[in-house]
Amino acid sequence: MTTEQTSNGDFEPEENAAVEAAVAGTDLDDVLFIGTALAPFFLEDPHTGDARASFEALAALDAEAAGEDWPFVDTEEARSALRHMQEGLAAGIDDEDLMWAYRRLFVGPGRLVAPPWGSVYTDHECVIFGESTLDLRAWMRDHGIERITDERTPEDHIGLMLAMLSFLVQERPELVDEYAADHLLTWAPHYLEQLEQAAEHPFYEGLARLTRRSLEGLQQERQLDVTVPRFYR
Image (cartoon, rainbow, N blue to C red; front, side):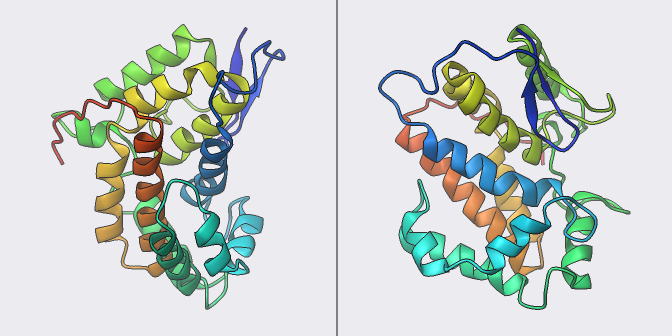
């Protein structure tokens, strides 16, 4: 079976996989939730992207109730991060400060202060398409997971990797822990800490903190053994 990922981060199977909805004895609904809920904010420009509904839902959220229910994260930490994100949306989704914050952090022009690709941190030359990117690409190929994007787009973008986490829960649940331990958790918390420090906007500060805490909690909850590489940035 071959599975494909669309350019906006969604993964689509060419055939319906004959796999179980979850690994025996585990519940992956919370993993699905964090991937689905958080990926669009990393992938989509708030002005020109396709995630307007996600931004609107976040702005209207009851942060107190959502923080209590947020998986893998202490209630007060989740509430604080969600309130911070809502503070960043107080001027509206069309606010230019929000738009420019996204573009400064994820698009450019200019040097990105916290690039969203894993190999920038794990490759000794701090480049995209580094060794960790190629390792992820090989892993995807070995498991029949194919990306539909320009070859110039690295697979290890944080938003794409969160989207893949959701895809694996739904289509290849037996691969979730391996993927998270070997390819996502190795670098994402380090990157997200840098993103929070560099964000200079409450929405993306809160997003970075909430995503980092969610992934750290996921690792602890699922008892994943993660080998942290040397970071060069």
